[in-house]
Image 1 (spheres, rainbow, N blue to C red):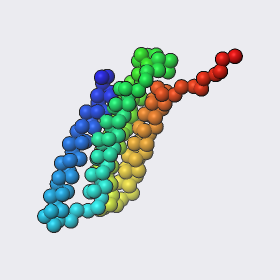
Image 2 (spheres, one colour):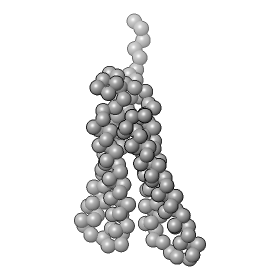
Image 3 (cartoon, rainbow, N blue to C red):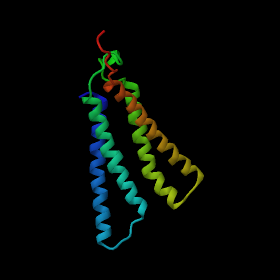
Length: 148
């Protein structure tokens, strides 16, 4: 398995473990009768969905989808390395900023933190756009023309 897909999958595994640890803490606090702010549950969901699931799906997709040697001749048809790494950084940096920034913004709202959270969300959107472009190049097949 190439480096970038491995990086996505390994990061997904880390987030899977973190999601279950946070889930256990939340359940323990609930069992002890302690209230937890709603935003903590939202961030728990972000860790599980974006951190684990999205990272893992992207890693597996980059690894297993069909090769397109015409679109990516420099990498034997896999994907361009720099955009794939950029997608990884944007997705995971955006997630890290959101995991810290969203609770901070809810508890102590400021324009600066709000702008940072919005930038993080757009970084994640940009990451998915890059991955979408890479994947599209690997799965798109032009319509076949009938034989004349």
